[in-house]
Length: 170
Image (cartoon, rainbow, N blue to C red; front, side):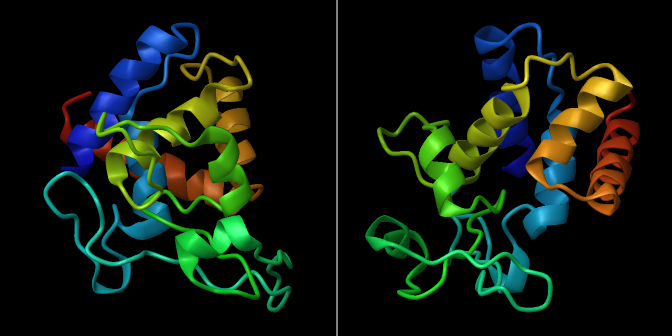
């Protein structure tokens, strides 16, 4: 189901932002790093793409190198923590980023960060926002780095994307 979600998002982005040239393997690389494709901590993808339970990152409380981001009434509904925000869903959006890029990739009338179709489409829109051509090394690196400002993260996503491309014969 995750591969289907990444492929659907990539095809939709090709219509929305043809100059971006986002491949499904980039989304798969991100999904792998962020949440094991929505299966972190024993979660699984249900029919339709929603996780069986919320996939949440640690409290963004400023400890251990984490940002300190307080929750608000809008973000609490996504993660349940009344004090601190958490990254959420298969693609690990922080609530403020989700508010900007939320997308209904499943076409069910609801944009849900805990649905892999919605999250993959939102991630694709986010990655393509710079206008870069993601088939170039510089454009791809810039887009993935914007998703998570870490060179190690970019390398992990690249490794995953390359593995998926090799498995797909490309």
